[in-house]
Image 1 (cartoon, rainbow, N blue to C red):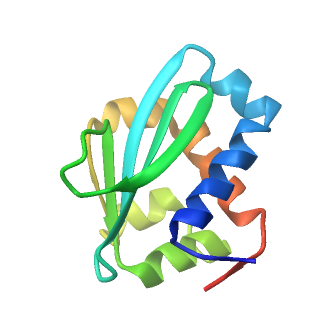
Image 2 (cartoon, one colour):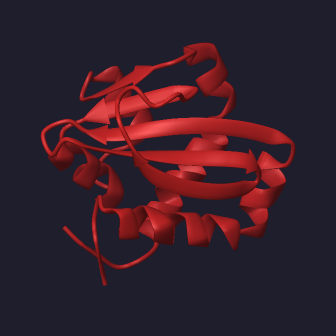
Length: 125
């Protein structure tokens, strides 16, 4: 079992997305880079998508990306456990987003797919 919000967690997330045929259909021909930061843990990870292929890496808040999502670790735990949804956490200001909101709205399907993939495997919190 992997520890949540670690390099191993993000690697498993990428592996699952890369094996997901529906993800491949959603992202064919699209590139996207997003950085997710747990502000209180001072941990950031890049999720990079080229076509539909996902790679992950450690990052900083300055890493170039289309979107930057930042929140406290406990908020990311709520999201990953299914106790809260990304759009609601953004609306409540619990996760701050930097990047084009209009563009992000067009990627809500893929963003939700990432969340569902993150929820789909065992992890320790």
